[in-house]
Amino acid sequence: MKSGTWVWVCMALFLSAVVSVALAQNRQPEEPSWAPKPVQPTKWVPPNKPHTKLSELKTKHKGKNDWREVIVSDEHLHGEYISMAGGGKVSRRFHPDTREWWIVMDGQIRFEIEGQESFIATKGSMVQVPMQTIYSMETVGDRPSLRFEVNIAKAKTLYPKDVEPPKTLGINWIPVKLGRKPGPYDRGNQPHINLYELAKAPRYAGGRFIHDDRAVSNIIYGYEKNLPPLDEKNRGHYHPECAEFWLIMAGQIRYPIENHGVIIAEEGDVVYAPIFTFHAPRFHGPGPSCRLAMNGFPNIAHLRDAEPH
Image (tube, rainbow, N blue to C red):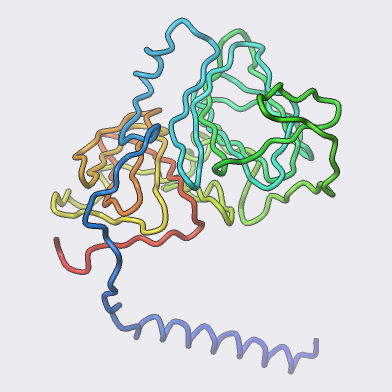
């Protein structure tokens, strides 16, 4: 590129930046909008419930190394807790159209993901596989592993030809071809990250873990001591298109939830707020605190009261 042309390009970029800043500074306050809010409160439809305590799940399944419990199941996402005994394995498989992810809450799991080096995930690990990507996993050692598993609602599972599919009532397994192409790790998605490693960074506040057209998962990390004073009248926000739920990964989170009351959720607990339901999550206790927020839209709308409630 000639020097004169380069100068003009630089000037154009500079002027564009100046205009953008000026527009942002002169932006008018947002005018309120009318939004739907049903007269009848949205109900929790089982298995979804306001607060699932990990301690109660462990008591329920005491003495078992292999167990699973569906925690979230709605029109957007499906999530369940799964305990797998030492040496337990999940055979090679893939999902034709959906991304799946896991959060390891205890033990060690070796993941084999197509196109990636094998790795061992431990407590605090968050792992994901894109669509059409073959994966398998195995509990390492004698101790059971515990993971929270999430996928798109009604996601289907396919198996490579050398793997025998599970016998399923009403289903015939037939050989097919689909032009399979493993999905990329793009838009910031990574095969494996660990909260405790990330939190070593100064002033760590979290970030996006899952970015998909059909789902999102955000790490939200911090301390109550760094928040403004608690405002009991602040209802927070609600979502008009889908529910939202959270896995508590560290510390405690305080949740005032409309039509339910205040929940103090601890590590391993899952909190679920239905569609149209105000909620105001907040770090709680001496900290640090971390919640992993999950819902069905990459840029979900947060609807707040236009005036103090």
